[in-house]
Amino acid sequence: MTTPLETEFEQAIARYQNGEAVEDLIPIFKDICDRAPKNSAAWTCLSWLYLLSDRPKSAYNAANKAVKLTPQDPQAQVNLALAMLEIDKKGVRSHIDRALEVMAYSDELREELERNCQDGLTRKPDWQNLKRVQAWLFA
Image 1 (cartoon, rainbow, N blue to C red):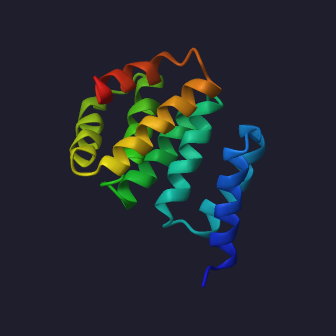
Image 2 (cartoon, rainbow, N blue to C red):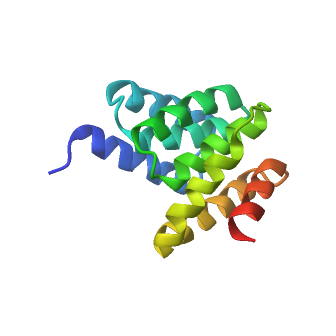
């Protein structure tokens, strides 16, 4: 049985996938994170939304929480690497390497990351740091 919070999370993901504005979704995901602070997936989503809305410091904080909660999540690692690139923070390579490790064991996660990169470039076509990360991951 799903909880109301899980339902809210699923609905928020669906709204994102249906093209709703990132700025409208940030408060929803922020609220979910506040109410479920150990929900790594919610922190990962929030960090992605912050990256899309050019808020790299907020993205860094959210992605850092997601990685601490679930270090084996390659999307969280990629989001943290992207945020670090955006704010010129050192240590990006270790997060890319961790994502590559996990992707080596899961074609499903690899395909999901590829789709997410494409989605990011569709929403933000001139995102140079995402293009760099994409080249590192899928070269």
